[in-house]
Image (cartoon, rainbow over all chains, first blue to last red; front, side, top):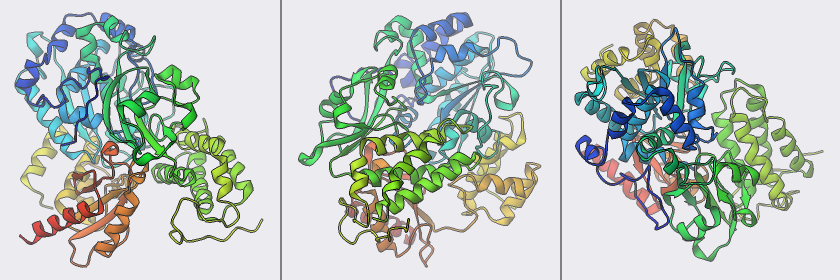
Length: 440
Length: 160
């Protein structure tokens, strides 16, 4: 069981049943469980779609697309079956929120999948959970089984004459599978290679049928919108950024943890008040605001609202809610290298700019961190990264490039401090093998 | 090949969940690996046959997923995360400590077959970093001292 934290500024919507034993279906029912599904059964599909659209709910996986809008792209008539797919392949470094949802409130995800299904005219949902989260797959298996046993899933749900099936599905270790088209490939039993779009999954998805794919947190928000209303949800955050978010504070922060805060909460306040500031008298250096694929913010840039539009304006992204905080003892070259090592490892190799780009960048950054870098490499890192942007089937290439570009731009001096055989100023002497400076 | 009743039951049930047989492949490979220890040639042949796939098609899928392995591993696979959130809170030191204590490197296995070690990417424990997984169990907010206790505990469990 993971440790739960709390702060007075929290607004508990998605996390309101955390720590309350809601994995037990009777307890869940006591806590307003399955009321949203029953209400939604009496609503016209268009009304559900509009309600979610007007709530300002945007994709919690990172892209931040309006959820109701996404649902409205699913054609009303389809020769092939339609599907709802819950993305629980949480793997963006810095992000550990869906884990809590599955651990504490699995039935909320089930309700979200069902309501999405009612909205788009689908009767089948899949809940995909990453392979490492085996205990959560077991929790979800039990929750689905309990829902079937009560007649909440299966045939004639709640005596409505309608049917709905949900199946669990487990991954086996792959970051890229969190990308929607790779997720479908994986569910179909293949390598998680992305598909070219268009056609978008809403039109041609799982086994060729129209498919709605939403993040677990997005779907877990839906029942609350159905019960509380679009206006209530929308007003929790700034315009067009409805609701709350599970922010995962990690790194150099006094009180790390997952906190549910209103959309638009100030990042500086989040770090210093909610998270308790930087430990051991150190100073803030940089923040990854929404998972490792987001451009980093410097200490001077953190006075910003944490909503999709404000973060975009600030030159970064709200992403998946993973807030990773770096103090002034952090070597940004090493940080960039660790991020690139990850993307090189996770790149499937399908698109050349990503496959080659991440490999070259990892090599260049390794050499740099070991004191073997050349001045021209600084611009070369940026050049290589920029040439990956928008040139791949899925955004993994962008995800590798964006933080790297921001680190080179914002912390150029740290790269210069590593130049011409100088050892990393942040590492203990002799800790890294010194590489020779390459001949020009 | 003979697998456990639990596996067979789940496998049969899963086949009813999807419009195509092949869709069960990824979770099935992990479940079978949990029983056999690794995806041996015999396992691959068996799964391919059951799902009307070629062995190559199964191998292509195996090589994509980082949790799947075609080589035997130790009874306890120690997976230490060194991605950014863990890096900032001592993930690398933790990995180094495990390497020294177990006397093996990345993807190595101890001579007694008890432990394997792996440096892994983000396991979703960022707010409780540094973290490691031993098989499927999460161990969080680790220190070198706590890690020692964790490893000793598994060692004890194996000899009981």
